[in-house]
Amino acid sequence: MKKFGIHTAVMVFAGALTASSFAQNVYYNGDRVTFSGDERSFVESNVTFVPFRAMSDRIGARFERSESGETIRVTWRNKIGQYRKGTNEMILEGRINKINRPARERNDVLFIPVRFFELLTGGAVSYRNNGNSGSDGGLFGGSGNNNSNNGSASVYYNGRPLSFSGNERPFRSNGTVQVPFRAMGDRLGYNTDRSSDGRTISVWKDYDRVEYVKGANYFRLNDERRSLRTSSQERDGVLFVPIEIFQALAGRDLSTSGGSGGGLFGGSGGSYNDEYSNNSQELYYDGRSVTFLGDERPIVKGSTLLVPARALASRIGASFERTDDGKRMWIRWRGREAQYDKGNIWFRINGDRQSLSTISVDRNGIVFIPVKVFQALTENRIQVR
Image (tube, rainbow, N blue to C red; front, side, top):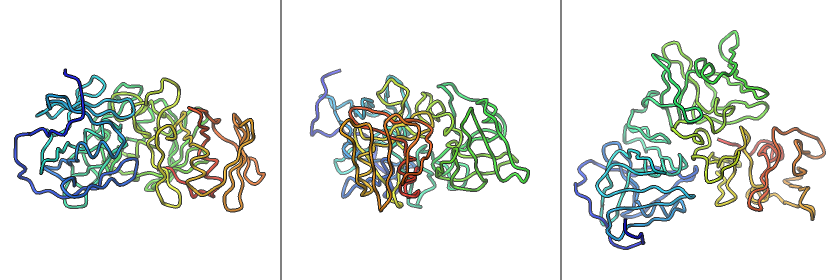
């Protein structure tokens, strides 16, 4: 392959657009991505197309085209997605993946199915339609309708597929995957239980326990409340629950793609070869999305979300102080104070001691602490979805 470089030439793809089109809602880490003029995204045959170069720019990826104009390469967080002219495939980390349709050209702007970016970012890029189409969209794409059944889904544990049969097969719904509660617990070797009235279910592993009430859009991991995109569903006598309920216990080992590292927190494990995974969950403060870039992106250890202490304090308007040796920190917000000592399994809110499930982490000069510290400080005005 010839050397890559960024050029202004535009590749021409055969085939005219015959289907009606409309703008889509495209998101990156929960934030709406907007395009204007000729770069507006559109839909053709239930496939959402986004402007190739502009979308790369929006997510901070490097967009490159070969000198021949035959191949495009997009680099995002050390992951490379490659696309070749006229095909409906992308090459990601040496594997060929389907992306629904070949690229399209409109008014000299090259568009690619959003699936390219969903795969590249491990779900950090997502979309949902504006109600003019039957496409479910969301993290898993697909072309189902707007009812609960938007197509089957594959589930993997430690990179190996889990098998389900009959009416227990997982399916996609409203941007997430629904899994059979009892059967999923059996496959993972977790303990499951259900209240006598059938409304409350529990699943636990070692010292971690998840509780969920049927129909709710949240669950509890130990004493931490976590939001869900959708609620449980009953189908043919089988209770299905959002996969996030099990991912809270399994972490990055449980995913909806072949490689470990996907699942609840998206991505494919990032570029780090340690026990932490990159996080692409949505963090909210008073209902507004909180985003981070570069080395400040939150990380996950086991089932615990760790956030950059100084950066998050700044986002919520709190003061942040540390001792000269960096071991102790204070975060003050609206008359409340959180005190945390690096490496401790506990912290204090206005002097009251509270426990944590894991300790802080230093990475690239940034201190990450469990999000629970901020949730306790703000009286649960910070949510993880």
